[in-house]
Length: 240
Image 1 (cartoon, one colour):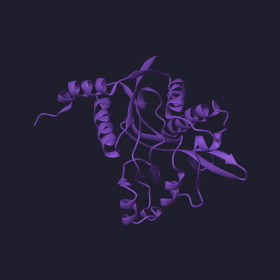
Image 2 (cartoon, one colour):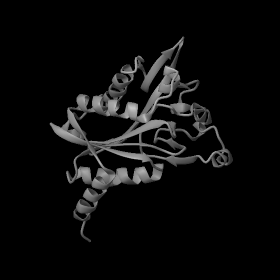
Image 3 (cartoon, helix red, strand yellow):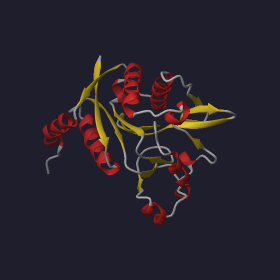
Image 4 (cartoon, helix red, strand yellow):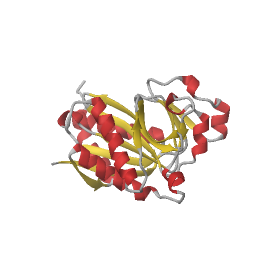
């Protein structure tokens, strides 16, 4: 069984995490490094995917500055979303070519890992036809618990998922979440009616993701990953 290293970055800026992703992706494409799952939280930030529409950002630049909210256009799929404290953001950087060359299957697998993790808390999450991510039925409506937006290049994955644990849901009022009008967003904390910590949830998501992908999940430190990258990156550079 192949191994995937789980690296907890803690609270890290979006740009810093994206730069690290790109370094790992470059190394993964040459097999200089194995599969990696980055787990983190971001300070307040709104990101727009390559299929997104700027009009789905409802707040002006002035309001974003007032709220200390950053904004980035990204290479991932999907529309617009919010990331912030209390939300688990996962960036699997995997050689999908060695697992299964099927983008739709991969997205469904990310959903399934989060559905199974949510079930461990006694909450039934599900897919909704035509909508990516996982949803929970509340009364007569569906509320979104987790979003997905991925990028795949030469069968190496990047970007990933965002799962609301104890997120301040008011920040989703600044956008049209995932470009879906009237989309309601929820969190595990809201659904359970009690406080929930990230460390209760992220190991469950990682475990189920490993099982579904056929990967052995092993913890690794940020220091170890950075040292490995520094070791292999000179070999990745193309001579002039």
